[in-house]
Image 1 (cartoon, helix red, strand yellow):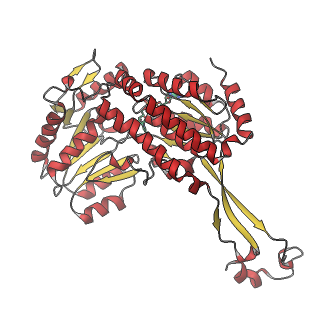
Image 2: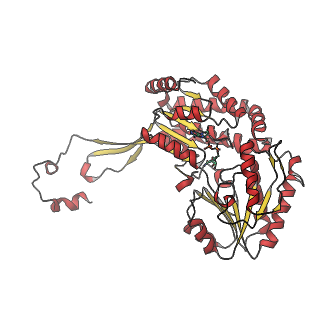
Image 3: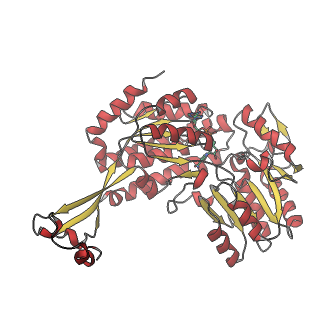
Length: 457
Ligand code: NAD
């Protein structure tokens, strides 16, 4: 195995040279990254096709353009973000100045998953570089073509003392996690998130956990049924359902169920044809293990559409299931594939109760035209994000932080939040030598009550 200890030690030495503190240096590295990504666009698309059967359009939209757009936004704003922030100084410390200095952590470990294997490695790297850190990334071994390409792009073009890509699986990740990092950024499952947090706790390393879970999608009786069905089918079956924020299960108001299900089927057929295996816009399941896990859910209800499979092609057609019990594996485990369980509801309070009695979701979708109900859903449930009358799009903006809450994760990134995540906000107070009130020093001659008003001012 590669000597990771040597790599991190070299990064720590390099970090101490303070080369990465220079804003010009950071911007040049981000520009270099942008150039390399643009140069490798077709290699990235080819690797994604091999690993996930992902079509060029989805690869471009969800992996490449997202990263390029983050790069542009961060490059354009970095100088402003890096400035010290002046704040007020309390009367008790005058004359003096107070401000916040933005400081990089040092060496950062980024661990990624396989479902958006390019985007979910490069998006955190951008934040880490922007904030002035050195980085080691560990792409997922389950998307081997992208993992090899990322390693090639990084290790051929960057000094390993600054950025390094370490390929490997559990053994290598365990070994990396045993080292003393200054920050860890993990994207993956809840169970592995716990392993990462336990490892981080040994060195008290701060961390971000971008995890998963079951994201509910609710369609109320007053929503625009055609648009809702179209957007739900798009968000559920994009990347073959292997999206952390995909609608995991659907609650439809009982009054519209009969009208709504045919619309879901209509859009599945519109998007992928009668037989999705022939569609060049429909991807494949990542591996045999996930194929077996997903097809095992078929027994948890009645398939009303889809259910066709081909293990040889790692293909599962877009599948709609009704009649599932809420305690079945289909309704208790994260699905992470093209299977959509459909349940009915009659009262919004039931749904709110249902959601609030389960782990907090990464995303929550609600389709309705009723402003009171929209506001009730937003106020009375907790989730990483809420998206009203749309799916997935809440992630595609620099202006909203992305992250989970509770078991769906901790910490946030994208846009300015990516920079903030990898930055230590150091408080600085600078006092003048003038005016040194005697009353604060022992022996204390004034009763505490006499100075209360002054201190609490
Ligand atoms: P995973 O947790 O199995 O693997 C993630 C990474 O951890 C991989 O690099 C893997 O090599 C490593 N790993 C796996 N087992 C490990 C172990 N025992 N010890 C140390 N490292 C280990 O996740 P995955 O299957 O790659 O991705 C799917 C999960 O990720 C889903 O739960 C999904 O919701 C979640 N996800 C979350 C986000 C988000 O932004 N919140 C994005 C994508 C995926």
